[in-house]
Structure formats: C-alpha cells, structure tokens
Amino acid sequence: MAAHRGLAAFTFSLCAGLGLGAVVAAPAGAATVTAHPAAHNATHATPHATPTAAPAPGGFWLVDSAGRVGAVGAVPFGGAQPATPPTTPVVALVPTPDGAGYWVVAADGGVFTYGDAHFYGSTGNLRLNQPIVTAAATPDGAGYWLIASDGGVFTFGDARFYGSTGAIRLNRPILSAAATADGRGYWLVASDGGIFTFGDARFFGSTGSVHLDHPVVGAATTPDGGGYWLATSGGRVYGFGDAVLHGDLTDASTAPGSPVVGMAASPDGAGYWLATSAGATFGFGDAVLAGMAQPADAASPVAGPATTPDGTPLGPVVAVAAPGPPPAAARAVQWALSQVGKPYVYGGVGPDGYDCSGLVMKAFAAVGVTLPRVAQDQYNAGPLVASGAPLEPGDVVFFGTPEAITHDGIYIGNGMMVDAPHTGTLVRVESYQWPDYVGATRPVAVPVNR
Image 1 (cartoon, rainbow, N blue to C red):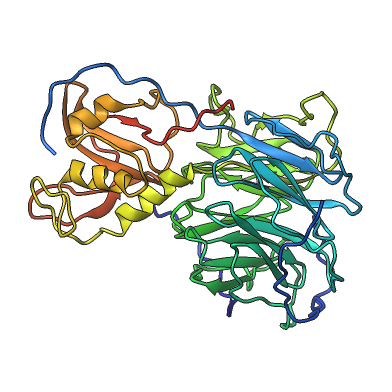
Image 2 (image 1 turned 135 degrees about the vertical axis):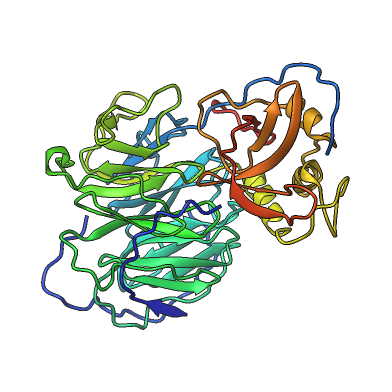
C-alpha cells in the first residue's frame, strides 16, 4: 500500500456530496475484510466494398439515492423501480465493461444488477464500521470492489485485494475509487483529493496539499491508466498524469446551480461529463451525446434533469457513469502497447518486429478479432467510424486516401495512437493527427441498441 498527498500538478500533455468542516480525521474503522460471494437476492491491395458505419458511442447514466436510473443517450437497462428497494441510500452506479449493464450499490453494500451485470456478492450480511461510498468493476466484469468511507475494501468475484486504508487515520473520508486498466490495482480518493494507490496503480499527483473551496466528489481515469481527473462539488476539475483538462464550471457566470456529485470520462478519455445533484449534466472535450454537437458554450448543460424510462423524474442524483470502450478493444490497445520499443520490420508480423498493418492485425488477433493482412484491406473491412464522430480506444486510424491507404495505427485515447511508423523506427506512441489522416474503423463494434 502506498498513500500519497502531493502538490497538485496541472497537466496539459496529449500523451498516448460531502461538506468540509473542521479538519478532523475520518474514523479508521476495523481491519479490511475480503468478503466472498453469498446468496443474495503492410503494403497495398485493391479496394472493394465500402465499409459500413460503426455505431456511435453511447451517453451516460444518472442514478438517484432511491436507485432510480436515468439513461441519457445510453441504453436503459432498468432501475426505474428496483424490484427490491434498497434499505439504505444508493451511492454508486458502475457500468459493466461492455456497457451492456450496470450495478447499483447502496450504502449498506447491497448490490442490484441490471442488463448483463452479474451478482457476485455483497456486504449485506456484514456489520460495517463505515458505510459503502463507492465501487469499481474488474476489467472483465466478473467481479467488483465495494469501498467504505474509511477505505475498507471488500472484494467479490475475481476482484483481488491489494490493500486498503482501513487501518489508517484519514484527514478526510474516502469517497471515490477507480481500478487500473488491467485490474491489478486501484486508486482510492479522499474528499480533500488525497490519492491512495494499491497494486499497480501509479501516483500522478493529488490536491491533498491544496486549499480547496469545495470537496472533491468524483474521479475518473484515462483509458490507458496513465492519469486521472478529480472534480469538486463546485465544478472545478484537476488533471494529473496524461489526463488533459478540457474545462470546468469555475466561472461564476456558469456556476452549476446545484452541487456537482460526480464525473464520468468519455470512452476515449478526450472529454468528461460533470453531473449535479439536480440532474443537469455538463460536457467538456468530446463528451457529447450521439448525434449532438458540443454546445457553443461548453459550460451549457448537454442534458437537463433526467427521468427514468417511464418518465419518472429522478430524485437527488448521487452518481454519473458512462460506458467505456468494449473490453476486446481495450485489450487490443494493451497488447499493442506491450510491443512498444520493438523495431519496424517491413512485412513483419512479430514477435520481434512489425510493419504498420502487421502490428494492427496481431493486436486484434490477440483478442480474437480477425483482420486482413494489409492496411488497405483493413480499411475496407470496416466498419467505418462516421466522419466527425469521437474516436474510441481500439479504433484503427488510417492515412493516405480511401483508395490508397499508406499507413495505419491503433487509437489509444487522448489524441494518441500506437503504431509502427517506418523503416528505422520503433513501435511507438504518437499523435494520430497527421495531415493525411483519412478516417478510422472500429473492428470491435458494439451496437448501441441491444
């Protein structure tokens, strides 16, 4: 376990509802319990067919304290009227990795499942020293962590225990958490922005030594796990590592009106949403809804107060969540990144070297997706991402012209790609924004409507 409270570092790199009172420590609580599931409720080719269009990314979900879920530009899976109403207030909503379901979590650790979210256990049969305040899912969706306000960590399914702050005297309570991209670690975030790292989670900075006008209420990580954002209840956003700042709500003329309660990153990590307790949601960067343009005023809500699918207004919103890239796409990115530093080899398909399309083909083969060998055929295979639509990690980006593709790479988020450029270079991470960028395909395309 490593606890860090460093100075805030505002980062602009393009690399691939608690109140503050007197400064007192949060209760340390008992030792962390690891709970177990219980019964509870390349070169050239002749082009052929025009690639079809990939689906646009979905939006986000909001959940209120009663467990009602509102879907905004995303698919609703349930939660309008929980079959078994929670006996304590709901505190978190966690999407499954494929975005086809979610878990709703209550303060007593009760877990409610919707869509393809499976139940792996809860703390409903345990006596907690402090309430559950947040949760995070493993990358394969086969487990989750429940985290208490004292930093106690409870593991279910394939979620492994890497440490906790349960025996540490905290200056402020834990209120948010996030898992690393490979699920072998996690960050715990306190309301003063103190960051605690466990497993392979790296420390990139914190607001632990910064005077905050409002407490930190939410956190989100970049797709590659190389950074994170923190958001305060007043709408200020801090970026660390490769988390690029796209704006916030600190201008007095665009104050959120009601407290911000959380944040969610867009699928490619090039934007984020901030949601308020009244259900208004603000988008920054490429955090927009499918078919919608970003408002001219970035501090204008992209969505007003949400309702459940049957039109029931949500009560006080407590959390916002958004689906990330499909798991297979994320794994393809991770595989390609593991080849960084290997030489460009003309016609190479590994393992000692690659050309551009060889790297792309092998990355997707590693996750069970078959692509043609050469770049032109890979472009033709599609499906094509609509022009102007946000890219997602795992999209294949192409260069040249549609009839003469000269290069491709794999988009990893934040405007960056991993690619094998040309003879004399190594596989590397660099910007995809080349003058001859022609478009992208989404080999791992997940339908928006299921």
